[in-house]
Image (cartoon, rainbow, N blue to C red; front, top):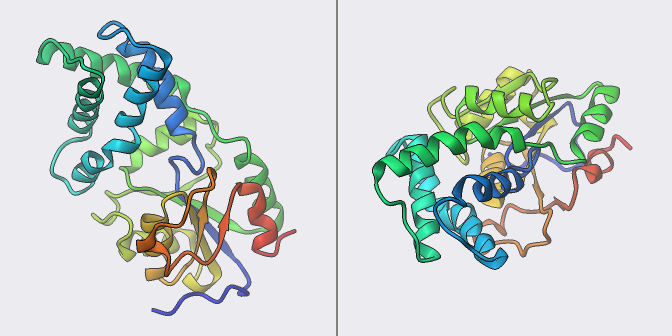
Length: 244
């Protein structure tokens, strides 16, 4: 399917959730330090290493969850075990790992926050009459709770991987977002922080994919053909799509 024309009048905006709308990495880091301190003593550099392994260096484990190979709880424990191994530690037994998981699941939601640029963007979209929603590589109910914890109840359209039994970059999950939003692909943009899942996937479904590159990363080679537009903040989006 051909890419949507950059100049097309935008009627809808679909957004990723984690690291796009919600500072999941920050929430994870704060919660991880709180609940893991009883299992290992680390310097600040050690905690940074543990949290980095749990997050960015364990995407392969999360991909196994998305593929249906392991449960959401299992992927969290496996990521924690990998992080502990990297800093020379381990859970003493399976019950300790299970207790860690119970504590982490209770604590982590309290740290979830929306990025500062989210509410101003939603205000601008509301003022312009542009429909918006979210499409995520997690299940609907978990992400619904996350958005609500972050004060983003106003985002009513939410598509998770359980809606069509597909995950980004599969075009099916983007098309379900379009169906629920009620907009045509050529008049809808998709914004996310993962160039492959979000931009390549959106382009494959006929949407205009925009990379939210908050940290100024280089475009990955495998996504270079699709990444034609990028922004450093959601505050740049209204002007980019002709609302300001």
